[in-house]
Length: 302
Image 1 (cartoon, rainbow, N blue to C red):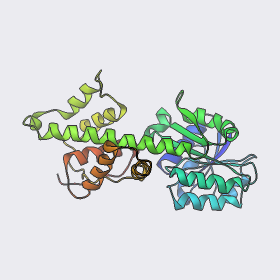
Image 2 (image 1 turned 45 degrees about the vertical axis):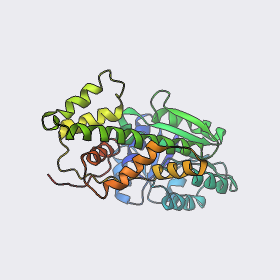
Image 3 (image 1 turned 90 degrees about the vertical axis):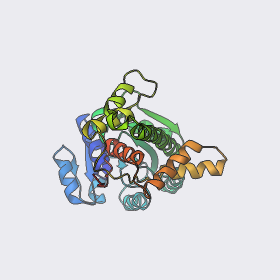
Image 4 (image 1 turned 135 degrees about the vertical axis):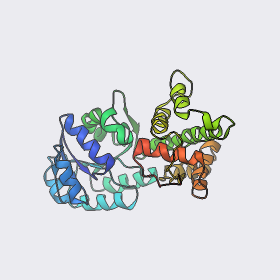
């Protein structure tokens, strides 16, 4: 299948590479021309404008957006509106707010353009391991891009969730759960670090142990095991932890619906608090975000 990838950052480039490796033809565009040229080294056909990108696709065109949520998505869609036609498909693979997905789907439907909201999880490891994809939108449009999803995802690693917005609401809750899981690991390892045994305790060994049959084993804990192996006390990492939006949206949605969500809410507040103090728990969170998503960490005191 021939498909376009708009946005060739950490996620977009690796997704384009996985598609090429899977036998698809990929046309890539990024606002930074050097990124499009870099993608060319991996077999991606570089385009240097949205018009050029659209012209390189056969109809019905499929254009996958991997750009930051919000204005960048709206800007890309506006640019594509004058380049694509009735029956073409736009897939928003970023971490967009699900209500924005509903709005965009309605606006594009009036032009005859299909819109798929596709929540993507897998971070910088997705190139090798595949991406978990949660998709919403018109079922026929979903079916038409399914060959791409099969290549991007591991076996049974993608799901049609329902109408527009459903893919991004599933991804929003996924990321909110991730906040809670990461916070639990962070608090637990801070307690170990502060215990009377902390100075002599091998935290890498504990993480490795818990990943061998323990009920708290997980991929996040595997990543933390790797982080402790490289840096046993996370020295040089600041405990400053960003939040990328999904946790806030989930908490606000829970408040609007009267759904109690104390663990995830506290996990979000812990990230706010990390920007006011430099705790070991916050360093664990920062190290985890760097491990799975390539998010930058701030240098800290050694």
